[in-house]
Length: 285
Image (tube, rainbow, N blue to C red; front, side, top):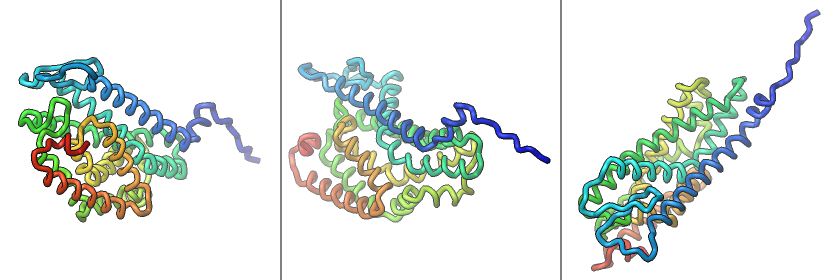
């Protein structure tokens, strides 16, 4: 007679089986930390009551300033890059929660002993895409500031440039590329299955998460560019765009929401163009 040996799960293994609760708690904590840092940076850059003429703020949370005429230093580039990374984490992590949950569930169904570490690598690959975007956004911010198209407070200094960015973002919301990328973002299970299902292991999970991040980037990059028109550190617009991204991906009517937002951006850009003599930052108040 063959006896079945029953082994009691360790406390760690019992916790790891609660993938859904762990992932949701992790997403909430990561998003909250990112937003706490953004609020801290925004309050530091506000510097109420101080004369900022001739200086630009560095988003370091330490009241750092540099003369407007001086070139960017490596440390300033690093601080701005870190700001964009934190911003992307705060804006994009909530919308990635559904596919991370699906990935963990598939790992459990595939009898993976520990799907949570693989799901963590998947999430890391997704965020790696947005870290790459943050590097590009930092470079774009440097170029815009050097061309005097961005104020020292990271707001658009050109009504025309701000309007063009809004109009472009509005038109992009209606393009086939936006639709294709949004479909992949709205169909987490379909995306994972199209690439062979659950991918156990660090490298394979990281790669799959990166692939999903590329589609997400294709879906949302133009929306992130809108921040150069509305204010890079404007917390209202950061939150509004983050909510828009979440609604596009999570709602069944996400495609319609994306197109309605496109119309709003387009109309806003045209309206801005029709405001002669107004700076972009003034026109948006």
